[in-house]
Length: 282
Ligand code: R5P
Image 1 (cartoon, rainbow, N blue to C red):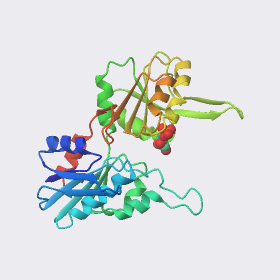
Image 2: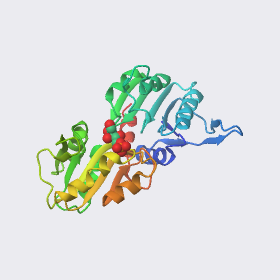
Image 3: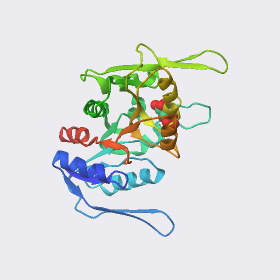
């Protein structure tokens, strides 16, 4: 299998080649004078190819479409989108809005498409391909297990993320729970774990995405107030837009744990083995 690493996922593509024993192709990415993207796969594309490219920015999506088109002579083209941008725009929230995740998925044509902890599984139906959504949260759980946390508790910031907290803690003997938000009055909201107490424990708040950091930042002081020992933030996709990191540390986070679906300084857990296993099974 030949692997093409798009501009947003070069390190991850290299790691996938290491894990899977595949062959990494060299490509060139640069800008034309007007800012448009020039993409060229320099090595021989061959028959079976897997393109790995997160679509963090709009330009990343253009690069992915260019790479797919460049591979149109190959007999099998697989696409791995470790982080799919716009995946949170998966519904029409107001009339007149597009379902952007669907619109983008429809442009991506391949034999197989792999995503990782995509925001909503329903997006997969819009791809013109066989699709698999891979789960990277057990890798995060294993990393947490190796850290010397004090009586760790993995917590989802809301009931929507409870599946992630469960999957990260499964088989590791670590407790998990989710934060339950109750509005007490116009001004005050109580946020606390649904079933467990945090007193004296290290708490790891886990979500699929940390974007502005707002969801997690608002809960850290509350957990500390309830007696949590240290509070950590974990996610699959470290979007970390604008001043998210500053916000989290200002709120009292002890550390941030994320995967390399987006390559950031906090990407300490690699999803490469998960991707390698999936592509080796095609
Ligand atoms: C929302 O549905 C997601 O699961 C995350 O909770 C959200 O994207 C986090 O965003 P932020 O970091 O901006 O609060």
